[in-house]
Image 1 (cartoon, helix red, strand yellow):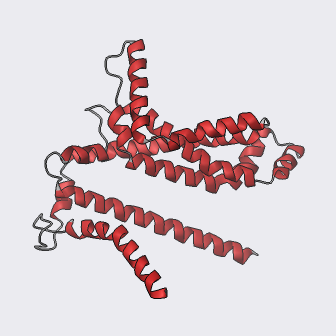
Image 2 (image 1 turned 45 degrees about the vertical axis):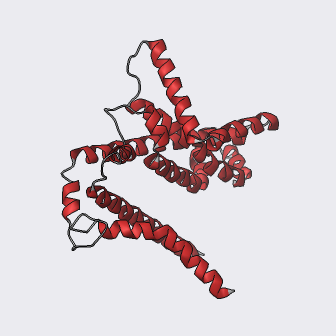
Length: 268
């Protein structure tokens, strides 16, 4: 039984990580072929940094991911605060259900709905071209928002309400009580929501496809447009850089977390 479970585990890991490993290895392949490995080279990395369209698409993706995740985190945190403060349980349940609908909807339904909304608003305002950077920013903020609320709301529910009441009794205003007492306690949930919103935005293709314009495309859209011909090997290099960047961030976060845990244990 133990051998079977280990075999199953290795098969799962192979299915998950073998494609990534192949991509990383062949990003250093000088021959530019998946059929044979002709030699180690940084050729495609050099070509990547000379591809102005790919770099602009990457900048657009990072702009959207950073902007939408910050907006979604700000709005979602205060939305979670409002949900936590609601007294009427029926209204609270209804708002919770409505908040979860975007997560249950297929991406294509959300993308088409947002496109129709933006086009309708553009028609009312008399704008011939409304789709582009700002519609994509609004769309990314919209579909990231429920995930932020889902990450932050449990932190409010776990928070000891007597600490807030004590802060108010000691002379804090409601804002000071939130900023000095509640926010530090819910910060892990806020950070988790921020990271999730950033990842969802950076990875999104379907919704972006419906609300984008030809003069503003993200990296997933740029790569998809290449599939009509041949994907450039410089894209393998770009994906490898993204993989190593994410890996480095994960290591830094885990290392910082372990140091913080040791300090707390040492303080005790």
